[in-house]
Length: 141
Image (cartoon, rainbow, N blue to C red):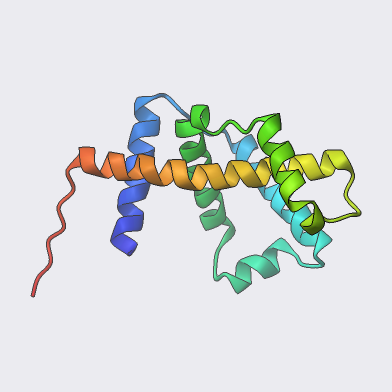
């Protein structure tokens, strides 16, 4: 599992470098501030959450950078239309927080649908990248 994680990271970083994709520290800082705000709204600190996950701020920064590289590699496949959002809201209106404004609901649904799309598209991209990289695993018995 650890080997696969390292291979995945290397594939993303190599392809991003080939395409000239870079992530600025400001983008990472913004993501960390968003996480911090979200945790604060749940009466938790970022430091407490990192401690529970046995993670450091440096590892979080590295993970965010990798996530953003992956998103930029496949961003042209992650579009979520207004129709997608409207259909989801219509099908799931009973499960959406009633205290949210319609715009907040749309934004949350759009983000969620984008994350779902990212998961499936990125997995397909990763499988293709692994096949093209011709990776061999050697195991001693």
